Image (cartoon, rainbow, N blue to C red; front, side, top):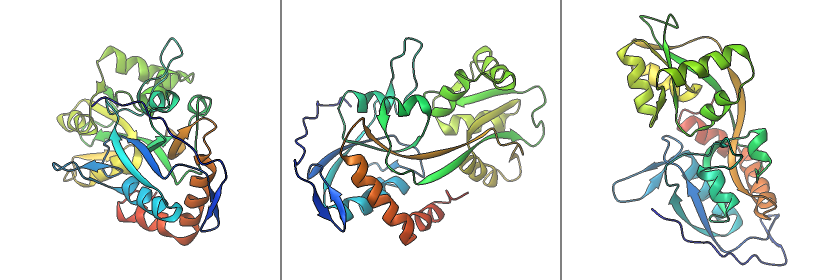
Length: 259
């Protein structure tokens, strides 16, 4: 799917909606990635998941409509060796979407080129292992194009650098979350990703898989907007409202995403 250039006319004067100043357009172009249970897409093209539910809450609260477009390549965005970005981050930089409704991790590099409203969740980076082998002489896999790849590829800690070297040496970049889990199930592999999602995979494995006890890192995640977009303040106000109301936590629990 190709993006069309998005020419958005922002309202000059902010309008207070539910006590939150909204100075954005009445219709937004939203970019997303397919990453259940955050976002799923059915055969008929309809969307569902935690991010869709939160987006609907925000849209109703602020009074806008939106169109969702799936990011070509389905990746959040990794900084390349030449300093450029790909994925959702590139789409926001280029002004081809108003909002990214993804489970986008907040990183220092990303915050230098895009803006984040108030984050809605915190996640842990964990390792999924096969119960029969643990971390003994394993090959490491990581989802190609997501924050975990970007984080590992730029790590300075010797242990993390060794894991990244292992990934590269063993062709450990996988195209989907399910491919990473399948590698671990087959034996001889460990998969690095979101701890909540990995825990769900372990629970569904009939005792074959488990999480290694170590937590590699903790990060916040949330929606994102282009730098200096007036939507940042409006979305922050709406998200903070739904955090305080308990709706965010209820939806995190609904989709089994709460730590």
